[in-house]
Length: 236
Image (cartoon, rainbow, N blue to C red):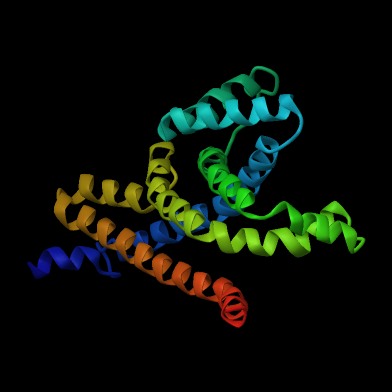
């Protein structure tokens, strides 16, 4: 039993450092993907509410495609398909696995988060924008100062769920040789023939990240709801 646990150590023959590096790569990809996916998702959501039929149609097509296509297939298209196409014009072109993973997972995240953003945007009364305009604020200022703070409060629970899904989906990038948790666990299993030990350790690492994420999201929700709750209490 203890001989097997020694395989998780940080000494010679141990996989401890490799697993930690894999965990760092997993979190790095997830954190890099999050702002890209959420920002693109917000743009898609604004397109869905646009007066332009073209933008609404493009947004609908985008979300339909990327919500319907498996994430792994999206990853393959970005990493292999796009790379091959560009190499026909630029022979030295290559996409780093980290960038490919971030772009692929970010595009999928954008499709799902756009629905959360749309729901949050629909919850904000039109009169607030009109009041902001009456105060002389531009549309950009009204969105930044009036709409966006409320948008975050309403959208945060849904975006938190998107983050939890993204965290687990990072395991897919192991198929394009990025050395994340799953890549290291699989490699360690091939060498040691101890699948339960290493895949169990991978499971615990993902579970730990999920617990920390759930706690952090809960704290963010409390913070964003603090002023709203105080305002609501004052009006009763």
